[in-house]
Length: 148
Length: 148
DNA sequence: ACTATATAGTACCATATTAGTACCATTTAA
DNA sequence: TTAAATGGTACTAATATGGTACTATATAGT
Ligand code: FES
Ligand code: FES
Image (cartoon, rainbow over all chains, first blue to last red; front, side, top):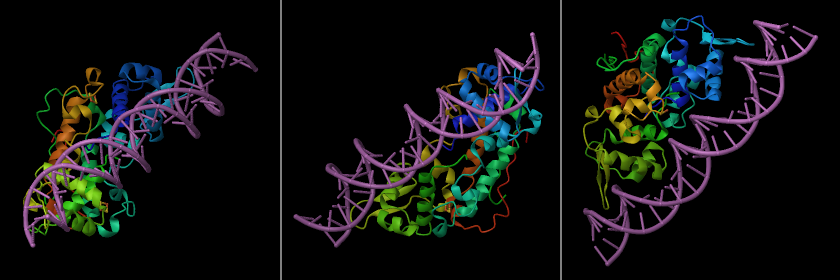
């Protein structure tokens, strides 16, 4: 199904929640409530987001989390990468030597091209755009591919 | 990592092997050898590909498999879909009611847009193109996204 | 200085998914 | 009739994921 992990999905939900509260600091607890997710899960996700400098954290009482940058400046690609690492369709798309079949399989170059294209597509979608609900997905993203 | 399953990877390898032999019928055993994969795995993959009408199968001695259509007419999207079902980033991209958070989460529309874009990108890449090795992925796929 | 509250980090477990295997039924060319 | 191939099902093992628990550390407020 070519899907992102649930953790990544959660991460986006939390980031969306954080958006619109720019400047305001929310605790993990508050974020869990607002996003209807479990606290431990939200905590885990937030820690990963802090590590990758997408959200700022403040300790102590009245501490919590806030977006590190404007939602317009954060891409979904970054969020995905923060949770599940580099965007790549196959092992070999990440770097040489990770795919068992590499010696006898010439697909690596093409997988890299495809992975790169998808990565770019996600880089072009900002958190701010993601936060705006779309009822009728009338205009899908437009993608041109090989030989274009 | 947003990756396809290994089975899907294998499926593409097998399809690539089948390509260039248009008309010729190869047994699962022969395909396993050529693609350096295990026979049971190749068999399993081939069965799925037959079900989705991507390859034709012939029983009995001197039976085997061959491409159902020209490699130019088969997209990687079809192969991926054959092995792992609809191309969708999240549960809710497939159809309503599959995502646990749906009631309180407005992301569904956007996920659908993104999933659709990726699906289209893969539809644009044919098996024939995939079979041509690319050493230097100089020109990646070009993708334009939201608001374009 | 003390304390309560919050994040940071690590380590862990339970479950779901995936990869891989085995077996037997069915078809068919020789 | 036989042997070689696919078709289908069911099973096992390995891995990845999702979720949890616990301890350490920082800090605002009293
Ligand atoms: S799929 Fe990775 S080397 Fe072929
Ligand atoms: S991510 Fe599926 S409904 Fe929000």
